[in-house]
Image 1 (tube, one colour):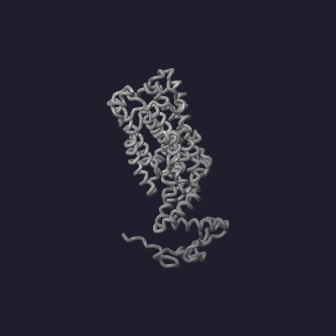
Image 2 (cartoon, one colour):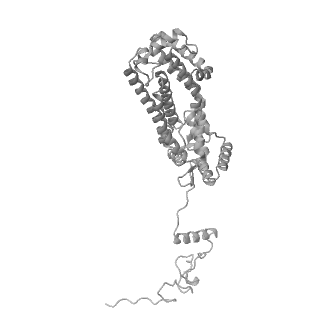
Image 3 (tube, one colour):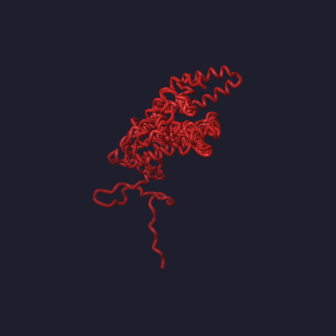
Length: 430
């Protein structure tokens, strides 16, 4: 144990120093020998570490999403070179290099806080065995050994014997009840964090082995925490419970405000954003502008949720711009339908197509246009073949009034009648 402790001495001293500084603050409020002072010091240590790890967490999110995007290509490589493992590994590394992703990036937060975990473990183990470690001197050691959290000493474990627990001023029942509750909470928070990631923040349009691995980890990690948790001191359980709760809250924030494209969380987020933008007729924050800008930039590559969002804005008379802003529909924009077709909306109104005319209307319109062009100086025939002969048309009236008989003109021939002068009808006989 001393050999392992010496390996982590470079981090044990800083960790013990941070705990002592927080203890000096909380000791003035709750008392230096209370479990609240020491317990809150450990919680504050976790919060400080997780704040410093936020950049790594952001990198983890980007790496995870990049890995999800590469899953179809990775599957093709596995199927193509399933009999050649070496070529398969080479192609995988080539794919990672071309896309700029790293599979280990998703594990960075866990790897980064592992040294702090081991350092805290050795500090608490030194308290349990009565050994000073780091900047914790004999006075602080005695104060820490008196500290209890709900009746369980900070250095006590679930597997400790009754005599060892009695030396720390507690009973075995109190220690096991407190540690069991903390182990259950620790495993439950880990399970819920992974479950909300799989059910809400995973692209449901892509079914890959990566998703199956994540589902498996959703059940493996809680079991691992439960198995190893019985060998952790109460102070370490406080550490892991706090960091799990932090991770759960951090994950909920990311899912709510920056979900994975194509996931159920994105559908819920875009629905909320559409109502918000429609109500205010603009995007109000940088985050909203960034989301709208990314959706507009995708063009035809938008998923169903993003197409629905753009079309909903269009129906409300709003247009999403390339810079992420939203304006009223003066400017034209292209809206992509679910089947991939695009329609132009907004801007100037569309030119109305003329109604379809019947054949008789087209014939009469053509005849009227021809007569107008000729100045109506002399009648012209229509484009269609007439049923009447040219000489069957009535002569124009004379200037003096009605037409004169015997001018040599022919009367109009009607269907079913003979051409030429017609005999007058005889009066009917009574």
